Amino acid sequence: MVAVEPTARLRASPLTLVRRAAGSPGQVARKLRGLASALRGYGGRRVTARLHRLARLGVIDTVPTKIQRMVGAIDMMRFFIVPCADDYYRSKGISFWFHVFLRFLDDPASVVDPTGFNSSKDAIIGHLMQVVHANPVYDYQLLESFEGGLDDLERQIEAVLDGSHPRAASIGAIVEDPTYHRRLLAHVRAYREDRSVPPMLRENVVANPAFSRAAEVFGTLPGAMRYFASLPTSPWAALRHVLFVRRLPDEAVAIARGS
Image (cartoon, rainbow, N blue to C red; front, side):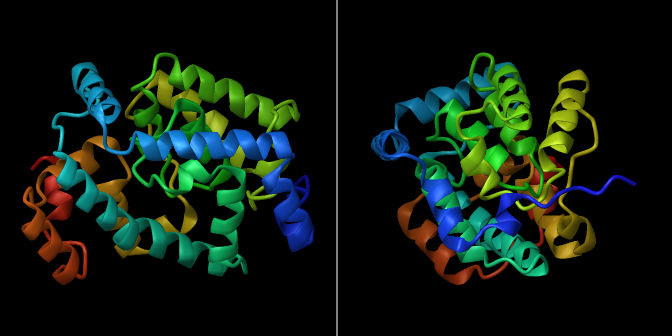
């Protein structure tokens, strides 16, 4: 077996990682403009248009309201993204919060938008390449709201692998798994050939029944949107849900499956 060299994330000092993730002054300025754009468009007509395009394409079968999307994003973060990622990075001996900080330096827009609805095509692609995903299928499907989204993803992964991508150094400062980009490239190619290809699940999702259950709800865009659409539509009911629902509801998987 050929030994795989550890990535910069596991070899370099924290200061070096911070410098690589931040990039040059020109790159920082572009990132801040991207963050401002994402915040300006938060929840606006651009999001609605993107969701309706996905519905027309048959990727999703329901479009949640703005309030439902907000509550759904909170549930996605607290029931899946944060606990699952924290567990994974602790198993690797990596600080989850330092990892989030590096991600923010590399692409702040992707960190403030957990659902990806307000993000540009390049921000979603960058997010896929900077994080070893619990299940990348949600993001593949999100990219289908853009013309040529999956084409661009494939090209950019190839560029990271051959070192020609402009963010290759900053992405290398974040991703701890040296096999991730090759596996991601193979999987997205397989997905484009057959949408029913088994998902590329992260190891702790496979090993943990609670994370596997949450991945069934939030790991694909159709499942997540069905769950979001089951959530409260009024501000007060939404607030009660956020304050008093402390775990993923028992019926969430059935809702996500459409059963």
